[in-house]
Image (cartoon, rainbow, N blue to C red; front, side, top):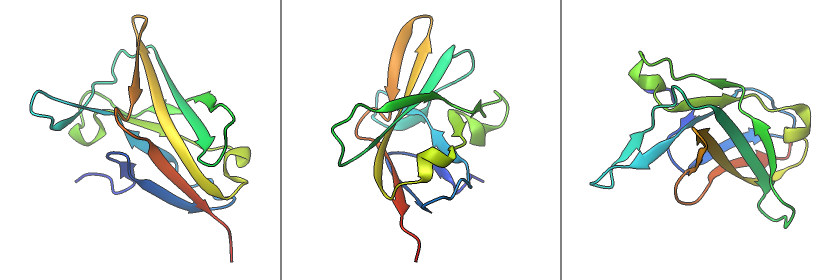
Length: 126
């Protein structure tokens, strides 16, 4: 069964200011010849970075290494899944954040999602 916390596409992850759990899980996918989203094999990817910026900001995105590549090459539910554990500074300001994942394999870069962004919505506490 697919993990309900894994962002399949450019969907939303909603948390409250200060929440550092759950970890942010993203499935990296690309369209095949039929434009069907297919998870990419993250085995052997040399470098995977997460890029985050506040949607309303004109400042450049900040970039961090992902915490873990969960794709173990065995479990089909983990194909293309990467995990990021946010720091306190990542979740201290409410707002809508645009997130991209940048990969590099043998010097060739790719960015996910292919269209749009993963969205992280950090809401204020009551």
